[in-house]
Length: 200
Image 1 (cartoon, one colour):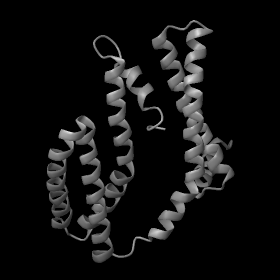
Image 2 (image 1 turned 45 degrees about the horizontal axis):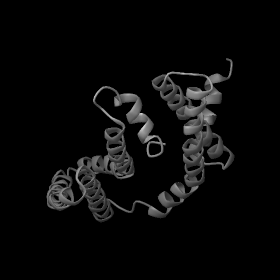
Image 3 (image 1 turned 90 degrees about the vertical axis):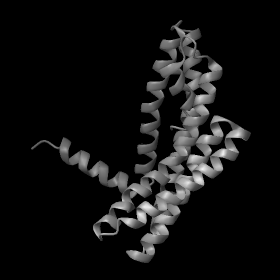
Image 4 (image 1 turned 30 degrees about the vertical axis):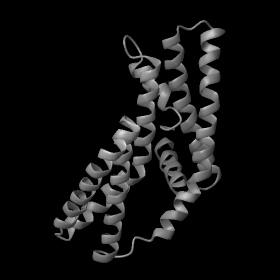
């Protein structure tokens, strides 16, 4: 969703005054790269506290320092070639490198992380994720154009309405398909919702 709606998000938040469409497109490319960082950042945040729990504070600091050096080295090369996207890309590379080091260290110092179960869970979520992205990708421009040209919404209001509608639409598609595909986390969430809605 963040990847697909990167440009509309930037346009709604920033495209006004001296901030042009070209600026919005450049910023959206950065947002798309940052969206790819979510997996690495999430895994890093849930594994690093395990090292603190066993009184190992030096290893997360060491992996971060090594990754920072990699970031500085790669950024100097990529910024010259790709500009701002190169800077963000080097951040993404360093973050995934840091995640890899932490996961390898986790396996050595703490124990197995059950990667196959994690991969199975990711693959189970993939169909709903892809269909959500495709639905939003095609429906957003259709809705924005319809609101602007047929209902005569001002451009900014058409974007804002289309953006929020598509965010809710994407969430609905994802949770519906996840539920139909019996994705375990969605099943548990729906069970909790039904418990809270059930009259006492």
